[in-house]
Amino acid sequence: MEHEAHVRWSLKDGPGSIKALRRSNAAPSLQERQGRVHPLGVIAQRQMTMRHVEAACDTWNEFLDEPQMISSARGDDHLRSLRTGLRPYASLQVVRTPAERAREVARQEGSLK
Picture 1 (cartoon, rainbow, N blue to C red):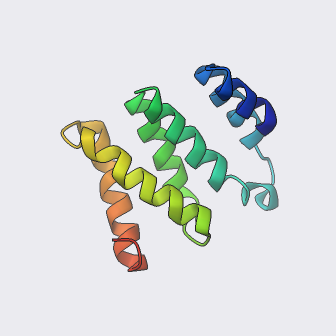
Picture 2: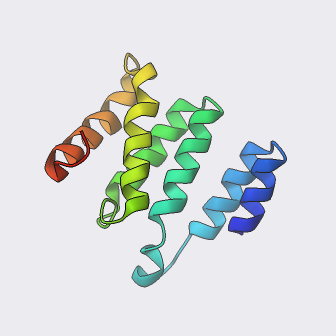
């Protein structure tokens, strides 16, 4: 389904791409959940590209809820994207929670300023 998501995104089908990523990310077991971080970051970035800021904030919050979120290079990259992508929307109430959470994670990590 991740391949389907990539093809749909390439064909300018943003909503279809996000649906395909959500389907592939619906992992029932804890072991399978460990692969959720990257797709959540991709979904949120695509939602931001489509200017679906509220949906992206919901997805970023899901991303930040994942305990292993920051333990990988991809997680670090997505956290950077989260922080820079939300800046233009900082005046919106919906952006405040994920932006504050991301700042706190970056502060705790020390390496993502």
